[in-house]
Length: 174
Picture: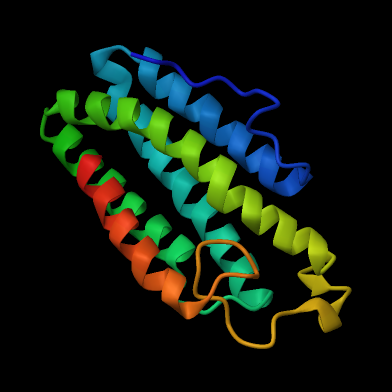
């Protein structure tokens, strides 16, 4: 199984996002290394973290001009639902499900961070968004219309349909 380790390749030059991502990577490593007796609890901790992690990013997106149904947030909802289902199955003793999901998350998270989250970080920097206060210091830089795409302020509504299809394909592989 490929283990995910924090590296400069995952860093997005946005401390609040990088800290949360590093915590995700650390919790995923705990899951990967957990003996069977500790696996369900380790997975629940990862799911709980991911719920807060995705919720935080989703709030940032809505605060800076993304449509509530943008494909980045949609991917968050799909992945989190699958992770919750893994927790339920793990609680029933199906530990192989959690181990399989953990392995898939290594690939998924790397891609997600380097694409969707990288675009989100750039967007937040472009509008001079302060994650601690939620203040946008360059409101004139906010998009004129809600962003439906997967992270870039240049995404159009048409991008939403194409990315939703990709999101569903990713979800089915988890």
